[in-house]
Image (cartoon, rainbow, N blue to C red; front, side, top):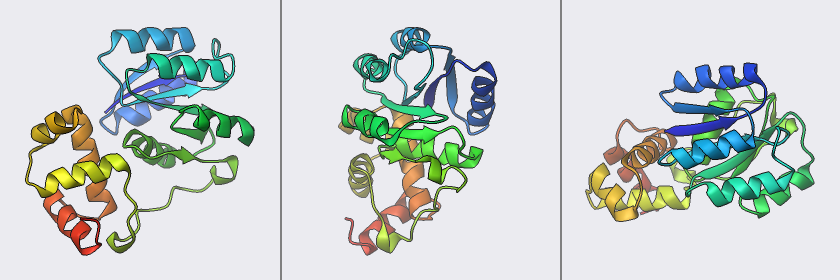
Length: 204
């Protein structure tokens, strides 16, 4: 999974780089909006673009709009140490995929980034900052994103990862990530077991 992290605090960028690289994510760093847009332009595509709301060049939600326009289809999310909820709601309304407070524990950040990249929309207020994200529910009470549902349907037909990628117009690395997310949600070891669990839950 390819992630672009844009923040004007060098120490925070280094923390994100180390944390996400350990999770086998490919991390690109930028120190302001303009450098982030340059990285977006030179990259094939990112799975997630995570922007600091208060870094240079953002100009409020105008920076979010610019990033969305140049994103090449990547999901764009915001992070901040402190951000009023009405701004968060406006950002989500114009297309942002989520908001993550900087006070989140490292494990929660990793989980949130994976969730947003796979198609979910998250708004984690400061009230959630000290609490780890909830673990996946049992397969009898699953909620799937539209992308997860599409991949699951393709898995049921027996298609390979490359076949699903071609069918849905996605990158293979993205499909692989969604399959792993499905296995984690259904608490299974492989995609075949996830499909069976989805059938039992009435999702297929």
